[in-house]
Image (cartoon, rainbow, N blue to C red; front, side):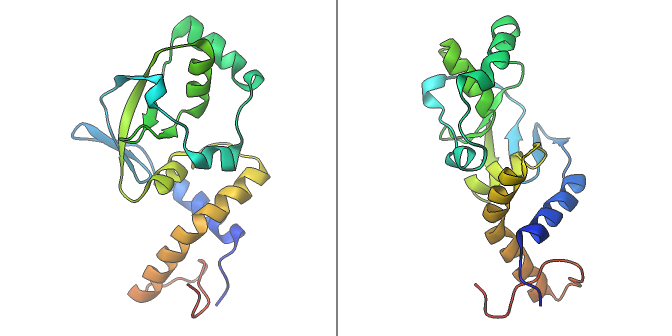
Length: 173
């Protein structure tokens, strides 16, 4: 069997992109594995913090990177709520948060997500459609590897046809 590689993971992620679409169901919707309420609330900007994977994958944005976004927020306000976990960790909306902080906003609109797996998985799922550099794709792929390995184990246990998909070497954990 072939080893799981970054390329295999990227192919799996790309295949999933076409399958994971937003849908409305009983006041909640799902993007990938992130479940959110349709309710937007206002939260103190100091109670919200960036997800550590954001800096690790995409780097911290400097003032010049959010300058045009600041102008839009100053003129029109924050048009799309920032997606956060129950404890205030940003899943999606880091640039909006950085721009809002730079503008000195005291509160921001947020939607609270309940991740069906874990916070890192929710973060990665929320950024699946993001345009990325090759370097960012490689960093992201390395973080997807444990999840893909688990899925591969489940497929092998279930005896599903895995032809053309990533497989684990026997004994790899």
